[in-house]
Amino acid sequence: MKNTTRFLLQGVAAAVVMTSFAARADVQKEPRFPVNNPQPVEGQYVHVPPTMEDLEKSDMHPELKRVIRRGHDLFMNTQQLRGKNVFNSMNCSSCHMGEGRLPFAGPVWPAAVVLPNYRPKNDQVNNLEERIAGCFSYSMNGKPPAWGSDDMVALTTYHQWLAKGVPIYQPGKTLYGRGYPNLPDPAQQPDYARGQQVYEENCVICHQADGAGVVKNDKVVFPAVWGDTSYNWGAGITRHFTLASFIKHNMPLGRPNSLSDQQAWDVAYYINNHERPQEPRYTGNVKETREKYLETFHVHTSYGLEHDGKLLGDHDNVGEKDFLKPDALIRRTYTAD
Ligand code: HEC
Ligand code: HEC
Image 1 (cartoon, rainbow, N blue to C red):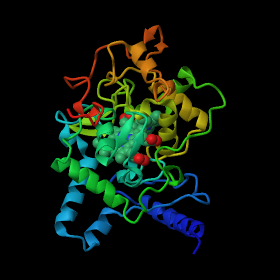
Image 2: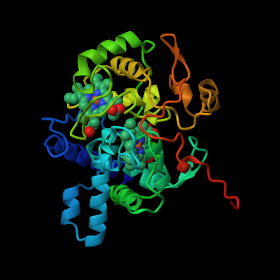
Image 3: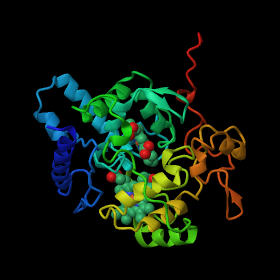
Image 4: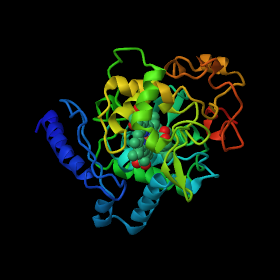
């Protein structure tokens, strides 16, 4: 069979499997998970990751199953590492929806098949552990579990198992639904006031007027979208285009793809013009830090720009943690030390 035909057939299978997310009551108490994302196009590689049910049914070694289960548990309830590796109200699953399996919701399996590879963000070759470390350092405003530790092995094993059957070094751009696929450029410049209105009408009920979400009995019910318990200024989702796509395809919870593209851009701009913990790569001067990482990153964020008479990110607030930059972000040099 020609590859493209196979991919398209897999696409149909994906649609069927994705429909079954509709009934997925275990992860989200939402009644429906609509399947109205863009469909795969010719030449795209479609992968349907295995489910935890598949894991239980498989004849893999019981010890391997145990480690994958642990990785899944850490991914879904990363708050168990709060105060140690996580210093905000996030789980990995807060941004990587559907247990890290869903297209257009930051599926995590691609990392297992495109890495090790060069990443401009830290200007070095990254393996899967280092990629996960990136999300701990920025998205979780924390520091990653040690390289090769039980928790790190469990997480990487879960990621790699989700990629079961995908050829290694598949070109990343051809993977259907990878990351948060870019929306078309907005017709009008994203606007704070319009974004605020979208937020008040569609988001405030869960994420709250102060952006802090809802935490009950140490359980994150609704994660924070800004403030001390949210992601920090270096997180990938502080880029307006990334947040706009995340929102368009995943929010409001249970009603993905219900906002217009313009509304998604506006509300992303609104959220990402609020304060949050300091960028771990902060040099001590926000404008200088913005400049230093402008081309690879901050050209897409509001960090170091003025909003409402205040310079965003002009502070020493690192949130709940007591350090700025985790050691894991120190660039490898391959020199003797
Ligand atoms: C605040 C949101 C957020 C949280 C929380 C978060 N991530 Fe991410 N993650 C992102 C964004 C944004 C990207 C980049 C997606 C892109 O490039 O489009 C990403 C990318 C990744 C990738 C690479 C995927 C690929 O396509 O190569 C992996 C792996 C990953 N995250 C794992 C994790 C793990 C594990 C955790 C928990 C420890 C976590 N993330 C928590 C936002 C988040
Ligand atoms: C019914 C409650 C609900 C509504 C309404 C809702 N969200 Fe969410 N949102 C969630 C939950 C729950 C998550 C975490 C995903 C998970 O755990 O599966 C989340 C995750 C997020 C995240 C990523 C994690 C973080 O905290 O940064 C962002 C950003 C976000 N929502 C923005 C929005 C925006 C913008 C709207 C309105 C257009 C919206 N949400 C409406 C419940 C909701």
